[in-house]
Amino acid sequence: MFPIRDHNPSERTPVVTWALIAINVIVFLSYYPTLGTNQALLMGFFDQWALVPSEVIKGIDTHTLLTSMFLHGGWMHLIGNMLFLYIFGDNLEDLMGHVGFLVFYILSGLAAAAGQMLADPASSIPMVGASGAIAGVMGGYLMMFPRARIDVLVILIVLIKVFTIPAWLMLGLWFALQLVNGLAMDVAGGGVAYWAHAGGFIAGLVLILPTWLRRGGARYWSATHGKPPHDEVEYVVERRSRSSIPRVRPVRSGHAGDRPLADLSRIPRSGSRRGGGPWSGNRD
Image 1 (cartoon, one colour):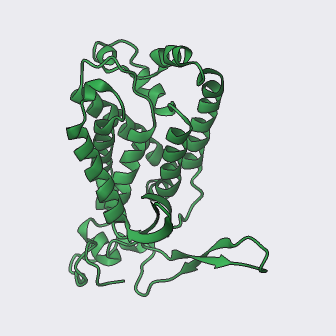
Image 2 (image 1 turned 90 degrees about the vertical axis):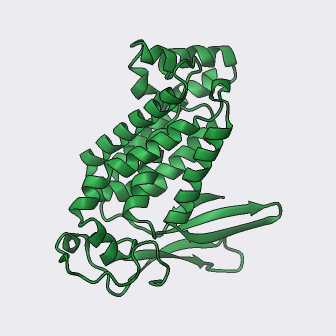
Image 3 (image 1 turned 180 degrees about the vertical axis):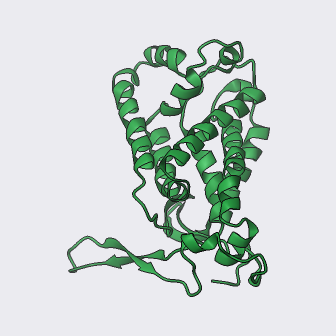
């Protein structure tokens, strides 16, 4: 099960999100096509630019705290991370502004690296990937839009189907898997940096708090019921002729009672809490 899109359009052009995706892709293409077929050369490259916990803790190659966020170990690693960033990044950038979102992203990535280093400070295994920073984006998204609708693709042998589920369920399950896998895995053996994912996710929850409080805190949730505070998007499948390939077209759909973002900061403290908050399902 993995997400393919949300129903939460951004109100401004997410230039930082797109720039981060472009930088990750360009950096990957600059080394992987030439080094990816030679494991020794690839590891030599990672030794220089990837994060090695035991060295960074000693104050060696601290630049890798940043450079490792833009490296990936393979095509699927890159594509998966960029898909998650594309789906969830634009909405946080919309809320926080371009500069604020960039700072949030970098800090989440640094917190993710700290999480992995705390889990195994003696590790000499290079760590690469934007997963930790993107996990922070996912944590921030969960805080601000817990009941935004996410379309996930489920593949069960011969069954391939898209389901729509609330963000809190998809992101909550993802975070739980990181914790379970992190506890079950021998961190000294390498593999997926689950504790980096968990650290980034928790950092995202914490770093988004000022934005959440500026929007009204619990009153923001009460007003939006955990959903995006603007029109959501429905996806309509169109077929112009029997021989044509179906096209998925987004169409905005309003929700009665929604408030624009600018109005949410003025919600009175005595406002109604009816609806059970962002986690209840009685407002769909």
